[in-house]
Image 1 (cartoon, rainbow, N blue to C red):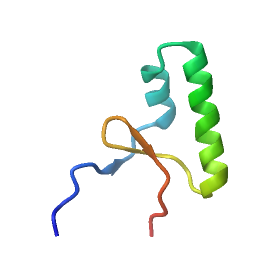
Image 2: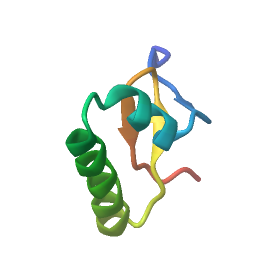
Image 3: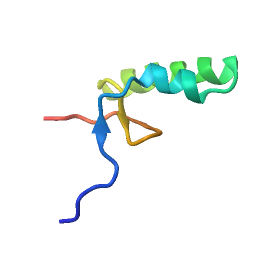
Length: 59
């Protein structure tokens, strides 16, 4: 089986959003989406690669 190129790491989701969002509205919307996804999935957000936020059950 091939190794995945994109891997989960301990990067801060909030730091990524603050650096990525180029307006206050995008920043607010991003944090609202993170909270919505947390509620829907039941999992905490984790950074994957340089620019993805994922919600995955890790054993």
